[in-house]
Image 1 (cartoon, rainbow, N blue to C red):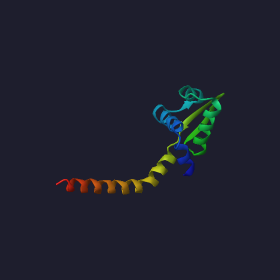
Image 2 (cartoon, rainbow, N blue to C red):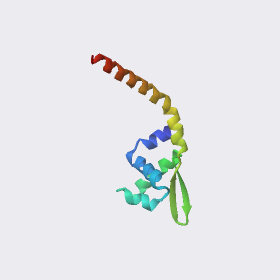
Image 3 (tube, helix red, strand yellow):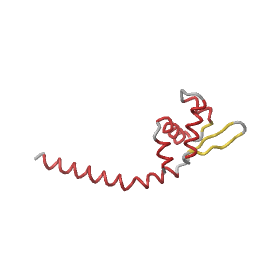
Length: 103
């Protein structure tokens, strides 16, 4: 799970995942058009996403096509759910307290 957190920590990688989620698989050239960076930097970002299991790479002739893998994100969501409930309960309690203290 550490690899997933590391991959998600970078805004460029999050944007790549968003593109793949919204628009489906992308060839590397189409991803490269979106970002103002050199190809080695883009390749490093894609390698980190692939190592974290967040994307798959498929070769089609000379082209590499990247697709989103949602399984690691579901695992992360499941792991985070108890913490989300904890903070939601705390914030609801705070809101209730503030509503009653205004009287």
